Image (cartoon, rainbow, N blue to C red; front, side, top):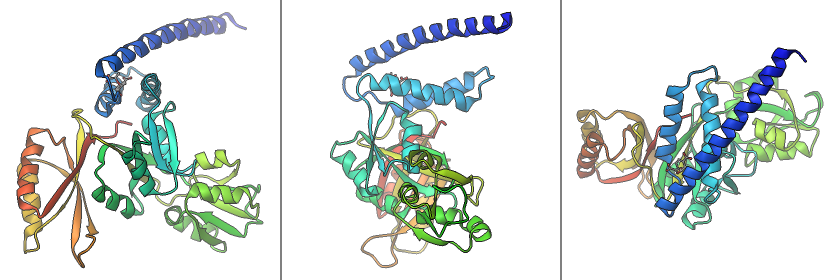
Length: 354
Ligand SMILES: C=C(O[C@@H]1C=C(C(=O)O)C=C[C@H]1O)C(=O)O
């Protein structure tokens, strides 16, 4: 081995020991904070601030995202010293919801798969999980209506958001597509790859199933089939990737929200989500949203859903920039409240840091 190589490795060994000693010191500080806080240690706003500060201070050559992923894991491990955070998600193992939960809570969290989205809400409400992660919208396919309805009906709060780039792969137990007779996937995933499928596999019958992880499981038992699912499902079920990244939109992204029994404190870069309905008279919708513009509050999402119980009546899901405790947001929300037939604040939370 050359002297230079040996020297560099010696240097890395010494640095690793320094990093390890500092990690231990950091973990002890987090433990002491746990004693002072007594109770729930997790603070989404503080974690977002840590990740943003480190990205801003990053001297390179590691990219900001790599630095943030490393520190996400450090915080996850520090938090687990108290007790591993229990997070419910729409299962089974291998779904994109699982990847979103991992991305947000890190490797030390205890993830709990559930059979349906409403079970995620139930697990958190019953205290069987500390938090839940649910998909709310996809950049190709739009709103996940069921999740929006549950957010309205449920007392839980949104305390975070996760954006996950969704890469879809064509998977099979077989080495090639030649013998395949069926294609399994979730309807959302089939829709996200619609054009690619029409161009490349128009002859194959498409079978929608409960989740893409379930599709991967079925394909693992049936070599005459293939599935569309993500990397996590491919690994879990030992499938070959016959074609990678087959989503039609190269920016295909799903937005998830984190739900818990409280929302988050202000982090300096926040969003607030609410649901409202206007009085049923001309110009009511404009009157409802006008205070936002007047107080300089940016609206980043406006989505309507049919209101349960009234034919052709709608509720509106609104996301705005800022925390509900920020002066301009608080003033705008108070006026909106006076003008609306109904308002529910779903929560304020940090803008996704990674
Ligand atoms: C240590 C704290 O508690 C938790 C652990 C954090 C960390 O390891 O940096 C950050 C926020 C909390 O989720 C804190 O509030 O500062």
